[in-house]
Length: 95
Image 1 (spheres, rainbow, N blue to C red):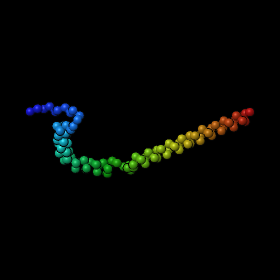
Image 2: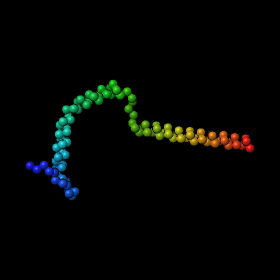
Image 3: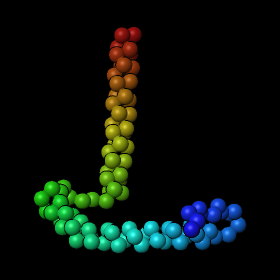
Image 4: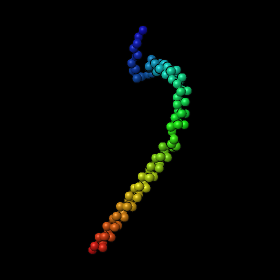
């Protein structure tokens, strides 16, 4: 029996590699399927006891952070303009 998988030439499908992939996927499904109820119980317990924060979409967070960043920039610009005006007034008073 040969244990060598033929090398793909790139011109067509490699049936041996495809078959190996399908077999491995089937084995993984058969092995992991019994774990599905355990994972479901763990997920429910996590949601009930650990996860206290509200779930929000990342787009909402991004919008809120983007709005805050733009208002922070506007406030920084306003502060900088206010300081420039004060220096101009001080210079005019000194003259």
